[in-house]
Image 1 (cartoon, rainbow, N blue to C red):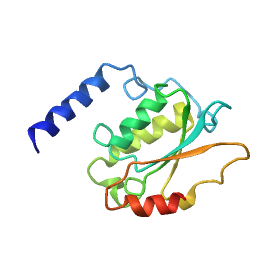
Image 2: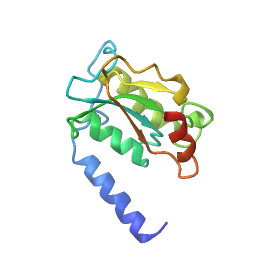
Image 3: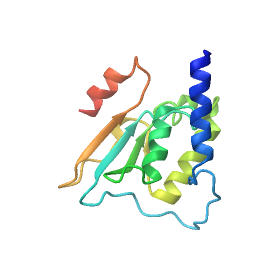
Length: 146
């Protein structure tokens, strides 16, 4: 673990701690909200490869979109093969499960194990895929997304 990566990791944690994000507040909803849908001025975003909360760059992008930091994007779907599959019980699995639960309940984000599980794009909706997987997996994920 290099000094630079450690410093960047610390910066990311500090930015997270300074933001009033949905992950840091207790759930106030009693029922799930309806599925996230973009407005006419937003793109429907599919995040492919979310990663572990507080560690994955995809997770950080998700937090930014859910926090309204990108007004032209609406995070509607997250594709996470590892934590919705074999990695669910491993390191980072419980944290991802908590993030998934809160994202579904508070923002209506839908989670999928693979790109093939995504629903078809609705008429008139612009869909954007944000791929944030492992370098070795990204070419395959891009091909699947197309």
